[in-house]
Structure formats: C-alpha cells, structure tokens
Image 1 (cartoon, rainbow, N blue to C red):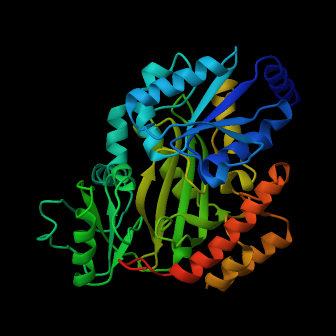
Image 2 (cartoon, rainbow, N blue to C red):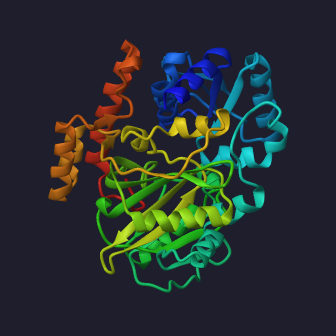
Amino acid sequence: MSVILTERKRLFMSAPFIPVLLGSDVNVYGMARSFHEAYGQYGVTSYAIGKKALGATSNSKIVKVAVTEPDLENDEVFVKTLVKFAEEHQNGKQLLLVPCGDNYIKLLVRNQEALRPYYTFSCIDEDLLMRLSIKESFYQVCTEHGFLFPKTTTCTAENYKEVELPFDFPCIIKPSNSVAYWNCTFPHKKKVFLANNKQEFDDILAAIYGSSYQDHLILQEYIPGEDCQMRVMNCYCGKDKKVKLIALGHALLEEHSPEGIGSYAAIINTVDHALAKQMKEFLEDIGYVGFANFDMKLDPRDGKYKLFEMNLRQGRSSFFVTAAGYNLATFLVNDLILGQPMGCVVADEPALWSIIPKHVIFKYVHDEDLKAEAKELIKAHRYIHSFYYEPDLSLKRRVYYLKNQLNYVKKYKKYFGNKGLHE
C-alpha cells in the first residue's frame, strides 16, 4: 500500500491532472468534492463547463465554473467549446472529463473521437447508448438479463388519446426522451407525474403533448409504497469492461418539488449481495464502461426489486457513495490516470447522506426503523451533507447553504405528496 501511495504522490506532484466536469448542478458539486477530498492535498481542483451557472457550484473554492455556454447542446458548439478549453488549460496536464448529466453523456458519445486527442474519459459507443437510454429498448435489455420492471406501455403524440392501459390506475407518466423533455415547458410541469384516474391521465397527457415535447411517453404501473421503498445503485466499470464498484443506497426520502420528483434527498448506504452479483454480470455482459446509475423500487407485493431506469452516469445523489467511504473520484483516477489494477468492491459500510435538513428527514419519513438507524448514524458521526464541506464554507457558500436548506423546508411543506397536474 505504501508503494502505491508513494507512486501516487510522485505522479501527482510531477504530472497533475485536472478534473473537467460537464454541468454545474449538485451532481457536479458532489464529484468536485470527491476529487477535492481525495486529491486536494496535491493541488487538484475541478473545473466545470455547462449551459449556465447554478447555485450548487457558485462561489466555490473546490470547483470553478470556467465556461457557461447556453448553446452547449449543439454538437459543433460542444466540441469547439471543449477543444478551446483544453488548448487553454492542458499545459502538459491530463484533462479528466466527467459528464454529469444525460444531455452531456449523449454529446460526449456522439463527439468522442473529436475529443479524445484532448481529454481522458470513459465512454460507451452510440449503439449501446441508444439501447440503454431509450426506455423502451432498455426494458427489453432488462428482460434479456432477468431484471423485473413495472408493467409498462408507451404512447405517442399521435395515439395518446386512444391509448389503453394494460394495468389499473394509479399510473406513472414520464418521458422516454429525458433530454427533449427537459427542454420543454408547460404549466405545472413535473419531472414525473402520477395519475390516479382516467381524468387526471387525460389532462396530463394533453398538457405534455401541448408543449414542444412530441416524443414517446412511458406509461407505467405504480409500485405501491413510500419513498423508503426506493433503492439506487451506482456502479463503476473500468476501461477493461469489468465492474470495479457497486454501491446500493436505501432511500429515506425523495425530493417532491416539480423539477425534483424522483431525485433522492436522503440515503443510507446498504448492501444486497445477490443484486450486486446480478448487476455485475449484466454490466460486464453488455461491455459497459464508466459510471452507471440504477433506480429501482422494492415491491411490497412480492418482495422483489422492480427496475425503473438506468442513467449512463453517476447519479445526482451519488455522493452518498463517497460519504460511505468509497470515493468515486478514486475509481476514475485509479483506472484512467494511474492504470492501477482493481478488483470489484461492493460498498458495505453504512452512512447517512442528505441534501436536506435533518429535521426534514425525521418529519417526513414514516418508517420508524429507518429513522432509528439514521439517528444512530448521526450519533456515530456517519452523517454527511453534500453542501456542508468545511474547506468550501466561505461566507457566500454559508449563505447559499442556509438559503438552500430553508428552500427545501418550504418545498416539502408545499409539494410533499403532489405528483399531479396542479401546484
């Protein structure tokens, strides 16, 4: 171990690398914090390139939003922007490129050959991207590999008025094309909708297709249970297409604001070895590389996991993995910069992670056993909040943190349990 640490120090002192993170949201901040916790002592700090500056990464000492380009989702602009940044910042250093959003993943996959002379990164090919990112084809892949998922159908802008559901209400409604949906607007838009009856169903579909979004919608059976039935898994697959990290999170609470529905707000790291084995076999069978993130729910009716989707990146809440002691940045660096051989680590150390105030967790989580576990982890100093990071708590960051936490209190009070077409 000492030899490895000495080699790491020598490498970083003589040939430092620069993390370049695509985006500027909480996912980017979590990755920047991971890099800073692991390599800040070597002078390694992160740069971010995104469409706009967001509060999560503003006024930070550990990540600098170096470029904001509103037209960054244009392929030509994307390549030109990243090449220009590389030419200005390389100076003999390796630029480690980390996409932190679905749109940036697709841009990188499409333009990877143009960027490889300038950046080091993990990236799948476009055929695999299409199989995994479009939900209809992803569910086919799930079937091939033995994963269960909720009863599902789809509709289009042409047939949504006549669509027949093969299951009873309630019905989950979500976009097949998340990038196109992100760019559309309509009154009372939510990331995911829940229709309790036919009237709500018809109103939601009419509202969505009355916007610029004209792609397929996923219509899905609602799996009963509160937020704490949700699980999230983050994995890292090396350039040798072998799985290096598997971390499973037990959600305590999701966000409930219109733009945040389905995003996790509090997680306890847990472990399920049978699920980890199945996921490892799946990822290695399809030849995956890089980070992958899976959302699933434990169905109380049969006690089995039902897989919802796969994100071709680390999840927005993925800092829970670093919080538990399995620093995400080290897996990237060991694989892509150091070329260090690694086996597969299944994260099994518990920790409580959140982006919300602790009292919000205990107010809205109803599972007494989970609340007791959370209290024990807090007592054992195994609690970490993404934005509360001492090396980055300047006055402006402290003000942002306090405002952000107060805003969450207001959002839960206003939106908790609301997944319909109304405020």
